[in-house]
Length: 86
Image (cartoon, rainbow, N blue to C red):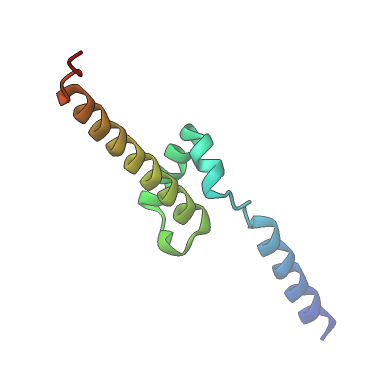
């Protein structure tokens, strides 16, 4: 009986040690290299949709892409808007 309890406790300890830190969307927004690395890992990872870091990295990437598209759009409008006549 004690061996079983020890085995279960050892297994729980090993699982707890293998848990990696979960980073926020803000972290991935500020750290584009870590975001790119995580997104590459998520591409080949099983159950990536359930991994908090994959979800947060994807949300950060979506925010970055949306901001870039918005800025491109605003730049295009500014370039096409005629200068005011005085």
